[in-house]
Length: 309
Ligand code: GDP
Image (cartoon, rainbow, N blue to C red; front, side, top):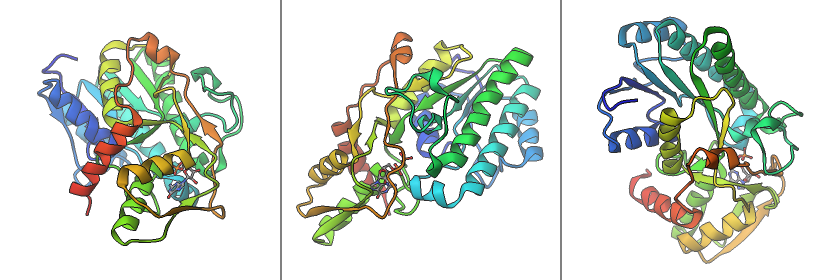
């Protein structure tokens, strides 16, 4: 990309898309185009085609998706499958039809098999059964990733896929029903502190392990990879370090300054026991994360207090 390239960020208001926008603007890219959900429904093929025909973007960051935490994924599988497959199909096909030079597709670490060896190497994709609580989302993301590869092999396009680990940061979803764990716990501990509650409920047993990456690091990585990575194989993006949900809860409790207790609600699902990404291929490209978990949670908590209504 050069600083005047026409860049379309699909999903620019979400956690990932908004971070990509901040990064591109910081780096001096001047020709970024966006559309709100209201202006352009990416599940609608005709609207998507019309948009690409009119705008003819050169580069596409495909960060538009229906996303959610363990409860949302488990409860609305039809929506997760349908909406994501439609968005991917429409954007990838329109990118091909209207000559996009390069597209970067956001996959996810939850698309790997439930019980694959740890840390997870890219080659473990499609080697075993998926975790049931997010199977629909995983199937949709696998379809998108494969479609990028099929377009590359059949039509010679340059569509790359990255597989981010669990993300957090500004503009995360803090709704307790649909959010991921880190945002949910920040809100729960914050409210418990304000309301002087005796305890905070954490879902599951606390034993699953998760890896967390600040979304500003992800944005830094994807802009770097748009300029430097041209392989057909997907690339993991993470920190290479994970912690248990119990340790995460204790860390957030400390950062928020809550003094009550933590209780585990074991009627709620744990999900996959562990999903730690192997980031050796990522590091070999020359990129490494910069924001460590404690400082990332601290700054996200500051953002939450100032911006969340
Ligand atoms: P996952 O990584 O796809 O399993 O999605 P989540 O981020 O939603 O959940 C990660 C882990 O955190 C699971 O074991 C959850 O049961 C656990 N967890 C603990 N408390 C919460 C909570 O309040 N919300 C969510 N979403 N997960 C929680």
